[in-house]
Length: 73
Length: 458
Image (cartoon, rainbow over all chains, first blue to last red; front, top):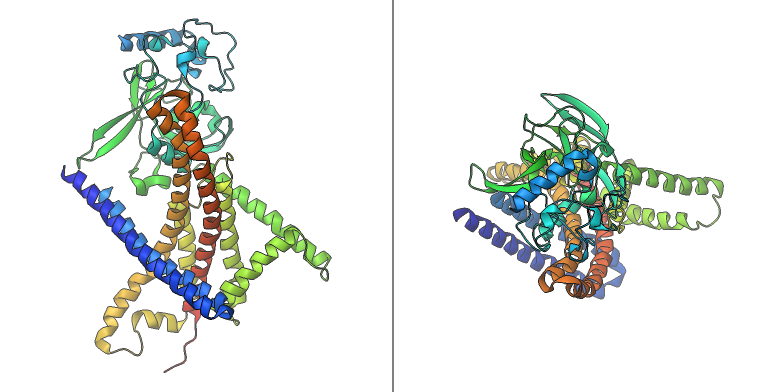
């Protein structure tokens, strides 16, 4: 019973982590679009920076998901 | 009663030893064309079987020994341990099986390329053989044991029961699975192999592949040229020949415009050089790291795309945590042996901040040293595995609908749902293949850039 709850909580935690990463990556992407629209000539630099930042945000979410897997498994 | 019948069928099988047992199907998975309700099970005519090919789906099943099936339909859950069907389609098990590594390279579950298998058990020593010794049949289950090893779902397992013949080959029956509670009260699956009507316990799979996902420690190690290793070798050779061809074209016609293959490779190559290597590492030092970045990028990209080719094994190399861990360790080593004095100073004694903050920052940065390769490893494996699982789930809709609505009608409805979703997902996965290779490379470049950057002294 208790273990079942732990697994569910871990799943909820992973879900919250994904929501956070989704919001973060969405904001990065949205702002990058704004920036490219404003300065199309800088689109290359902006794109690289965008992907890099998205990767960092995703990294935080991945750590949360990994912890969830360890707690559930 | 059915157990008795199953026993009888086993006894009958023993009379003609291996051949009948080759025809046994296996519990727990059944997808293609195994609708037995329409078959004639009564005639035990054993002629006309292709014992070598093991292609069950295309066969007339009338010749099979279906003693245990005589009295019930294929949706019954109460068949003997070696019944053809024991329950509905299992999406999770299928997905896990298809993203796992294996000791056989299957194309469409019809062509099975045996692979060299190198197994080591500390109490027994080495075993070198080809996995064809297992007589692999439907759904990558073996029909023969070899020196105490059997093949189940494409992977070598070791029998840990002294009653089982540990030397040479014997024919065995199907595999069964039991769920038990372990010491911590968690559910754990234990596999058994049926032999002479008795169940023999199998050890867990060797954990070089799936230990993180709950495999546990086993009594043997699998150092085989597995499906993933073969894919790696093939992709490496493919890349070698492609780039050699392009390089030759440059030396032969240095003044003409690139064409064909050269064009494709040059575009990607220039993109990585101009968008990744030069901005992140700098004009002065990028040439030293360019070969490393290019190798990483094209190897990951090649393996990502190789895994996306339908029906061609669908190997999941870049979605394998072990593989990405090795890549991440290589990156970790390259970054840190090239780290200059400033890099280490910024980690352990950050300049320009108050003294009491320095130890805190050192702890954070020291942790970051290891979190960087860890996230590299998880990001690539997670993204690629997730894509494979999504595609497999959408394909699984066919069988899930078939189970819900029964028979062919449900399968057809599921197929119409499944095809557009699968095509969409595969298109998305091709983008993901490029993006993830790019992200791995750009992060590697940024870590190298941070490690080799020369700061102006404040």
